[in-house]
Figure 1 (cartoon, helix red, strand yellow):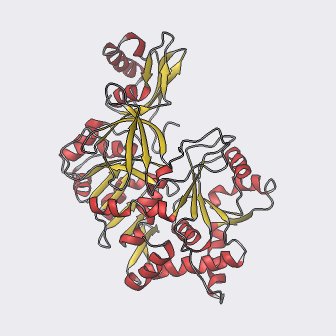
Figure 2 (cartoon, rainbow, N blue to C red):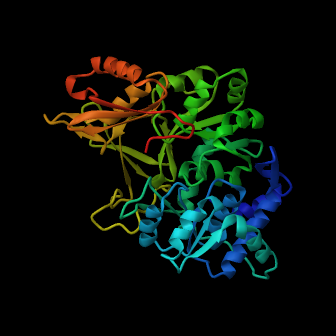
Figure 3 (spheres, rainbow, N blue to C red):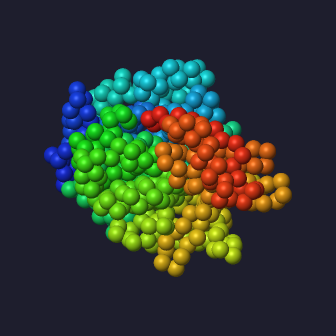
Length: 476
């Protein structure tokens, strides 16, 4: 296992003139070479060090971009700790987060300017950088500097802090080291050997560990090229244009591709060597459709606390009912299984974070042995196949003491044609549901009635809410 800066410096020797990151402008893709990218990373890093930001926590809040990648790799490889956050965060989210973790600088896009301006007076000690205005200037500062740059070689030092979905008064900040981030690479490579001959098309946000690690960070090992999505409305036509061989997706976009399938898209998908799908439960019938069409769709399961992947399907595995096979470099156990073998999924290994930052001592999902208690329920068979069965904390306790695991109901809802997402919760001790679909309320209610006929009375969905399906929309 090597450090980020070592990989970058080796890349400069191996692949200097090769195209690396492709960005669309004026309707066409234009490439930055490995040499240009790595020199920009190093020069930007020098500029940040000259501004006394070495060893500090530096936040990125922006849309996916070439500049985002340079900041991400430069901060972790040479400067300090990278804190990438969701561009959809509100000023309220920032206020609580910046009160919980010390941030020395924030890099934001022009699209986030108004939100940031409302925070600048509140946090005057933070240095604020608009990426579009400052990026080139920082590169130039580094180019003219005589500073001798040295990278971070301590693999056990925190180089990234990520946040779980949403923030509260006590945010769950997750520190990750270089060892955490690179621990799964060899296992992933054995299953899906990505190389410099591969092309990856990226449309998921970089601040997610799933995309930031598997789809971005690991490119400095594999050497594969990156094509950045220009806009979420262009995902399907750009897939056909780019013809990638490696893609990370989530079920929502998988369903959109299913709805839009035609000969050109099908041919493109068949050309993808590894189509990873993670982030949430995938409709089994949709998954099976793509695999039967000769597409290498690989379901993945992981968490931010474990640096992304815990289990990943093996190509050509005939077992389509599992949610992946656990990585051999991890210790995965099922704690307190019931009579059916269902229990909480516990993970231990080098990819597992050391624990949340700035939480009070009464709260932790990490035990004294360094294992992470995921809160997910599952079954693990003797071949390593993992079957997810819901969330430990996502359980409805009915008035008569019955337990309802809402994931089971969500899976049934996702089997309704044209339902893109579903969320179930408790209202007055009974299940209620929100579905994302363009079906009419009457049609959805009819489908729910049919589902309820299959369920005992206490599990039946009593209230349904319908949200129109809009591109990029999701249930929060």
